[in-house]
Image 1 (cartoon, rainbow, N blue to C red):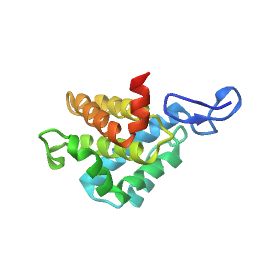
Image 2: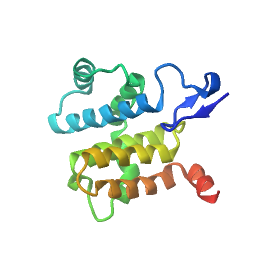
Image 3: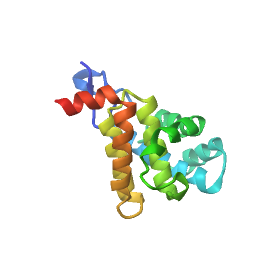
Image 4: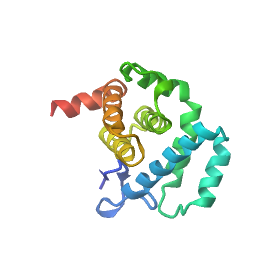
Length: 167
């Protein structure tokens, strides 16, 4: 049996259970720490490897999908130009430099997922970014992030968005 949980993780175990270590909650924590690590990367300018090592030492990673954390944390800087090019047209009268570091981190992380993790439904990507924006972002930043990612998803995941909106 194959199903998807609320984090977009495909489940292949008995009764739709996720593979060991990969659940909605562990993916959510991976995104949580990834957003914080990308914020730190932007603010402190430390290397991604040293930031990852610090997070692994300073945080209890027991309930974190560490492979997902690693992939996104390293994937965003590796594909930064491509990621920013994908969402910049939708910033609406703002430049990337005008965005606060939390908003930048969330848009980069979510756009990475939209572009490179097509196994995760676009709605999950957007909902997770909006949830983190409500927790860590500036007032109403979640509305801005939702609008930008919704437009980016319509381009990056056109068939999926069209199928979802048509049903």
